[in-house]
View (cartoon, rainbow over the protein chains, first blue to last red):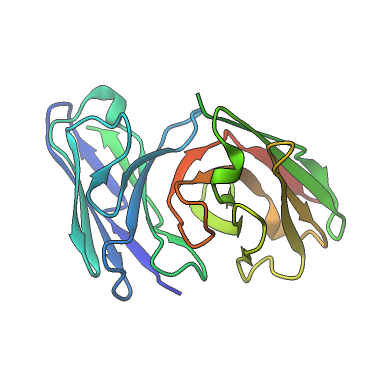
Length: 108
Length: 122
């Protein structure tokens, strides 16, 4: 099983600041990584797949990078609606698909 | 607009069974693999099971293998999860998710429902 580890657990920033979220895989997953956003009362939203491809409708301030075992989700300038929990997920190995434990992005 | 609407959750005693459903609309259902993902209260996401577009390929997490059965009815645009021998640790919000790919091995969850809550307690 590929174990996914996200850091930090909580990130406290202000609107307008840059956010950098990290995700590490226990072994290489190539670029088979997705990022999701979760807000209370809303459906989970796919942000990024193939490590760096933005999903439909995702603003350009979101970008993804990395390959192998180290990945980053960057939000260039935080807006109020970006404060949420973010999960990474690997799909390199479907036995099973695994998620990171999440990073909570909160308003400072 | 893609819509995934889960139903069938509720309170059930340990050892009993429950079947949850997901009604899909707004897309060609049999063009996509489908999955169940769960989230225990205050916890992260756990993939539970997935099924390819034509039901030929199915997979389960080890935690549910032998107890849960995933199925789909493409004529009804519906996904199901039959859960038997339920345990307290199965308590979670169960989400239905649409894969970008038609095959089980795709694994990118493009759209999600709001979830149905399953509580296993005596």
